[in-house]
Length: 304
Image (cartoon, rainbow, N blue to C red; front, side, top):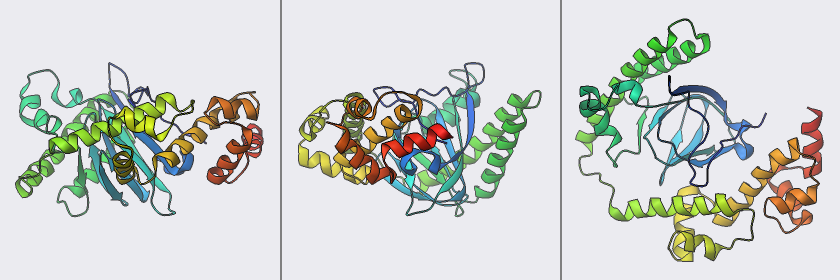
């Protein structure tokens, strides 16, 4: 199967995370179900917790790259840009749940929000909080994630009450880890320069997502985030571990997959639609990344 994350032109994820009555969404995901074993940079106003069940992955949050291993838990803060990709040649299975922090604090100006939630959400030093085997809270955190997964699978009468209870307990553990890190690293502050770099990266990716179907150049992408071409290439490769050109080609191929599976467009029409100059170059790049031709991919997935 192929999994994808639907984004708007500003890289905000559009996938519904529950609904207004119960803003909670839990998924079991296998990384290889995404094209190229990676999910793209995106953000959303909800919190996201990822728990590694099996395997490993490289996980990026803003400009930080992390190596996540089995049983690692990571909480990504609201509006933080994040992405994941294959680590070496291993696959990865994980639980991911996204939830609105209102499930923790209940209402504006509550004690829960002002004393226990806002200090973390509003602290730009903490794009993420990693809980691994070195943290004393780790065993309880793993148990809670497993419990939340079981509750979501069964969906018995009243299960949202138990999910809310589990999230509050989980937040208590996160709050303990957060306070300990504040004590250990009191001088860690995001500088204005780092904040600008993150915004530039967001602007560049948004430009690519909005304009990938056209004949865009490296100079145009760099100009979209108000930086020089050389500085932009350095920043992009540092954050995403690939060149802007490679990212653009992979994104174009990824966008063509759904057209090959679900559309009667010709290979030439698909190539032009996703930004390639013609079918020959499209087929060459497609085979480089997908290890088969567009025609073979179409036949395989239509037969399935």
